[in-house]
Image (cartoon, rainbow over the protein chains, first blue to last red):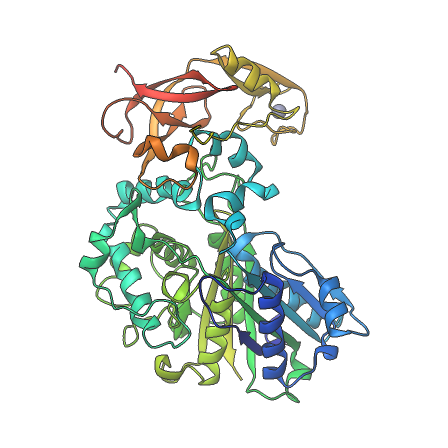
Length: 385
Length: 134
Ligand SMILES: [Zn+2]
């Protein structure tokens, strides 16, 4: 079977300012981020011939054709898997450009959750993939992701002894990194004690276990490797990429093993495609909708055995200077929540050596995960050219 | 002042039998009429034999706690007056898993024997669980 290894590169990245209470619509934010990513690559909007708008909350491919005057768009796709979608879009874009379908794919996302109709509890119950949850769980009070994930985390704690302090390690690492990032919402340092004392949201999740509600947009460009050499930035190759779904993806309640994730199926495929091992990974950007989700994914990606994710994150391992710097931008927990497209942006910057004050020295190979719809997963291994 | 209303399940052709029984205080679980495999939540096809033939069988509501959470923050105004409330995930003796509201004192523990039943409210019935007898 043909491998996608190194057939494509991420050639452009762009982000808006992240904030709360933006006066711009989701589509305006998405356009702004997209133009930045296109300029970063050294392209013009008319060069884009493939587009994957992430999610269905902002602009469509047609909207982009019209606003950019794209003369010959050859490819578009919609990937409906929540926060897993950006990394799944990497796989889709890599396949499209490797097959010669198109040259430059724009992956783009924008959101404005400050609008009242977009509050955390309301959103997911309008999405078709959550119809089981909406019919059977929402009416009895399982409203928002925190409440749906909490029993999964509670069971992980009961089975493996995972602790509140270990959740806190993830929150503290992300916050520490956010303080190095001018475009991060959270500006105040936190300690394990601050985490432990933050108010309870859905036991065992406290406020500092939960990702941020924020407005903003992010975008990346994926180009065929043979086109990337002419562009502005150093090459960052997509070396390995894969997606996976848990059994019974529609509801955590109905999953045979409630703590299982799709990324467990995807990870071996991505590592094999990239031809690297876990020891080769210099840094990771792990989708952090909740602190617990980082611990669980590190296990399923294979950095440690299932149940050992808690001890794995202790003693600052995820912090800059630790063995596995993670979420060097601050993550969804402390930078902003744009469905993890910001995780890809950050990994690309790090591999270009553009990580600013959070730069990981000699970063050559990095991993980014996507996680959505309560358990769908994807990961990509990127390497600098 | 009227209290904010809680969401009500929207039954579909697939699930109508479940909610009709619930309104009468009975818990029924969808089974494949061809091979007998139980499935929940209701689905169109049996994933073992792909038959769409369905049989609804009564379940006792007895089971054991799989996991739980206590909600301390209302993400929907209809639940603000009930905080904190506990949600419990239960492995039913019927061979499937269900989510319900916990109505006994204190928090449940994993493995605890529980008994489920429906209590009526508005135009629907809520599945609730209470501590059972070992
Ligand atoms: Zn069957």
